[in-house]
Amino acid sequence: MSENKIRKGLPRAQQQPAIPEPLKGEVSGEAAPLLRFVLDNARYIAAGLGVLVLAAGAGAGYRWWAAEQAREAQAELGMITVTKTGAERVQALETFAAKAPSGVRNAVLLDLAAAAMEQKDYDKAASAWERLAAADGATGVVARIGRAQALSQAGKDAEALAVLEGLEGSVSEISRNAVRGQLAVVAERAGKLDRAVAAYEQLMASDTGGNKDYFRSRVEALKARMQKGGA
Image (cartoon, rainbow, N blue to C red; front, top):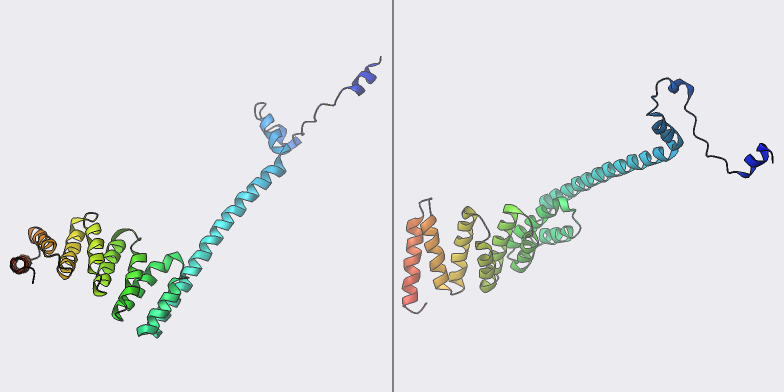
């Protein structure tokens, strides 16, 4: 059997991609296989790079879109603040809060809570403060104090006291005094005179602003009421 016949029966070896003549002199023997791989898979590598470029472009596009949405929302919030008053402003802010982008939502809720408090719509104010209370840092603390105040103004002193007592142990000492001040007032309104006394005594012990005499007077007045049966 001739050699040609034998060769016809064997599978052909895969042809290696040729290295272009201008590169042959620049490529070492060790690097040649890598260069062949790149040449052989150039279109796939290019496609992969294209995906990365598209992903980067999509990310930049989303950031631009989000920034544009935030600018438009800020402009709309400013327009409501300037052109609306009273109950109409509360209604406009409530509607806007439902669709506001996350970047400005807290500002909208803060305005809504303040506007509702001004209108003595304490239930609506408490709801706005409650949504805002999820925010981190000082904003969340202020919102929870604001919610307690709104609940108390709505005649829900027991609920307000529960909010403040839950907050008292989770804030810094500086913020804790603000919470205790509100807690003392709410506890007194709720008829929890012993709790109000404890709050005033804690304020008196930590005071550095010259308010000790006031806190002492409140403690003495409340203790006198307690001796008379809480009247």
